[in-house]
Image 1: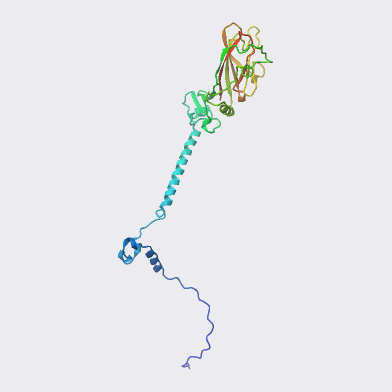
Image 2: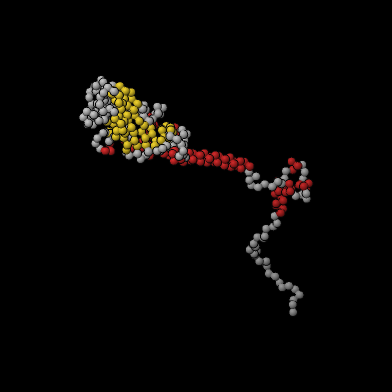
Length: 316
C-alpha cells in the first residue's frame, strides 16, 4: 500500500556543474537601435514615427562600396589615367625604335634600317645614331637608298691645290705625310662642321661594328707630280701611300688586302698641266677606314703641286 506521506528527505547536497549556454536571442531589437542611432533628427525636425510605423530605415539612401568612397575612386581614376599616358608614350617610343625614319628626332642605327622600314625613301641626308643613346649625339650622313650604304663626308672634303713641300724629296722608306709632316697640313676628319669630332669618332666606331664592308675614294690632283705609275719607267715606285684609321698603310703593291686600286690616272708624267688620279680602297676590315692621311712621293720641287678631294667613307 502506498504511503500518504512523502518519504523523509535528507540535508541538501552540493550545487551541480554549470549547464551549457542557451541559444542566442532574437536580434531585431539591437538592429533597430543601431539604425535609430543613425537617424538625423536635427535635419528633419521630427521623430522616426513620422516616416511610417516608427521605421527610420526607410529614409536611408542605399550605397554600394564604390559610391561610399568617392575620394578613393578619384585617386584610382587619376592613377589609371597616368598609367595610360605613360604606356602610350612608351608605345610611341617603341614604334620609333622599331621603325626609325632617319629624322633628327627618330634617328636610325644605319641607313640600311631606314631602307628596310621605308623602301620608297629617296637617297639623301638622314640622321643616324649607331650607339642608340640620346638622339642629341646623332650625326647626319648621306644614305644611298639604292644600296643601303651609310656614307660620312670628310670635313673639309678637299685640300687646295698648291706647292705644299719643298724641303726634300720623299721616298717609300721616308714618306712625307700631308697631315703629320707638312706644317700647314692636317689629318683628315669626318662629319658635319657643327658636329664635335669626338662624337663622330664614337659613332664611327659603332658603325664599323654594325657593318660588314666599307669603301672610300680619294682623288689626287697633280701638276708635275706622279701619283701612281711613272710613265717614263712604267714602275710604281712613286705611287703615293694612304694611311688607314687603324694606322696601317695602304699601298699600290704588296699585301693584297692592303692594296688600293686606281680608277683613273692622268698624273703619270710631268707636263705642267693639271691631271688627276682616283684611288679606291674596299675592305671587309672596317677598322681600316676612313683614310686619315696621305703621303705623295713625287713632291719636293717648286713646280710640283697637288690638291686633294677626300670622298665620303661608306659602310654597308
